[in-house]
Figure 1 (cartoon, protein in one colour):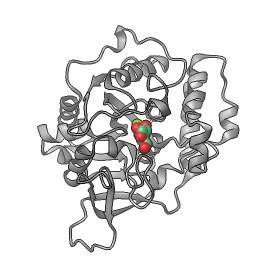
Figure 2 (tube, rainbow, N blue to C red):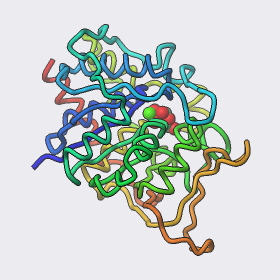
Figure 3 (tube, rainbow, N blue to C red):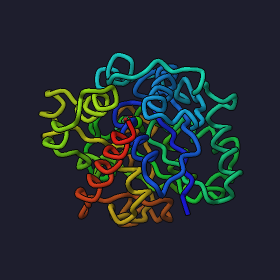
Figure 4 (cartoon, rainbow, N blue to C red):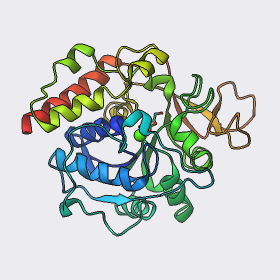
Length: 315
Ligand code: RIB
Ligand code: CA
């Protein structure tokens, strides 16, 4: 029995590996990709999502273009991390085979949730604008989903855009605030995704004699030396793929149920994921958060490496 999965994404190098993992794992059926501003403007992230699907020969997967802008914040993008077009690699120019569907991503998310009647998992690995809009269209969205998994925030770890805020939440704090408050998410933040690295020896052994191998290599090495040094990493953190890995194997991460809230009030706290592990607010838990205890990095790496091996074999 495969598990239907919708990936809301801003490809994005780590997004691309997350999409590859989702497409290649036998337990998952990817019902669509919804694109959002984030690592690049939404025209670029939509282009990139289509290009990744055509690169891995999966033009059958629907793409739905989403929000151009955050709900309130000005657009902020990360080409300095992911490349001038928001992604690195040797990608094809998308063809008509991956023409986006007519529905806006927010509507597509609601349509898919209703169509799968409580069976759909949504993995949101970019800013949460589309998910927040979907929630505004359909307030019953959480009840219509099996699970909403979010790559974002930094519950008990430093941020990567401000000292408190992680990029996806900082890109659209109001959207993250609404989703964390009302959508019963499983939040997978920098607390654990900073450990989502791939072995340097395996990366160096990737075949680079074809566009897919070269692209996977570029996605796995998207951090510059300066970024690696800043975070004390040997190889890049493939944040988004850990969210997909958790969908596949829920034992990879340890989750705790707590009250959480996302800051929206000041430059200091905008996008900050504030978590209340001791219940001092008296508020009931409104979601689950991955905590940095015993992250099964080996299992994560096994899932990603197996998916890449399968993708490369098909070529
Ligand atoms: O902070 C990491 C997140 O921001 C990842 O989703 C990455 O793709 C960027 O969107
Ligand atoms: Ca992303």
